[in-house]
Length: 242
Image (tube, rainbow, N blue to C red; front, side, top):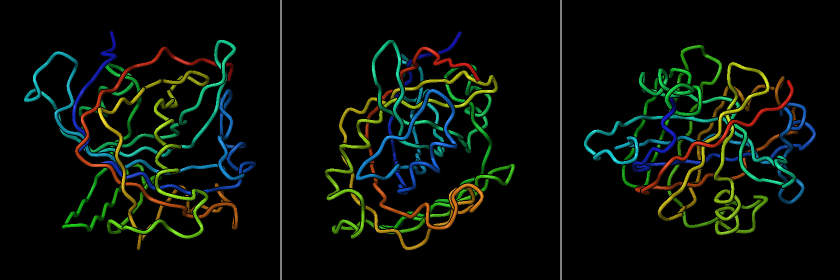
């Protein structure tokens, strides 16, 4: 029996976003997902999130757990019950918590891989490195909180980017069963982001030219959220013929 509602606090959530060729992304997406476009580009990225006091609804905060987590994701559309929906497809989840790795896909939606995280935070500076146990999802990002929005982004402003990603509250994760996807909806007590100026960025997945040929992907922006009360709500499985 799955625990379908969890609550806690987002200590820090960093969304590292890339714009990419829609045709390249479309070839990577399983049915029924399709790229969601903005300004003619598809959007993919990494969510790096530290959670605290996460526990099943109804339990006190002191029983909650703390964890560092990462998700490789893409903004997508899909159809269900005759309606078009918007959210994210999560091709992989990683966690520094053995409990999340054990319980993900069992007690709550979303299977997780084990990884080691190194985080440095000082004033407005932030640096995160992740080394996955299987070596396929290693990444590193560093930067500082900024006032200016990056030139060349597909979004005209931070507010425009914020609205786009706020609408992608439902995420679908791959499972060990082809054609079945675990769903989680993130509900935040408030949605507040600020831009992060990135000065160092590597990603084993997004830098791989076998996944993204030269010229098909580029860094677009990074958004930072901090100290947000939130809850996770499980969704009925989404199933599609493999």
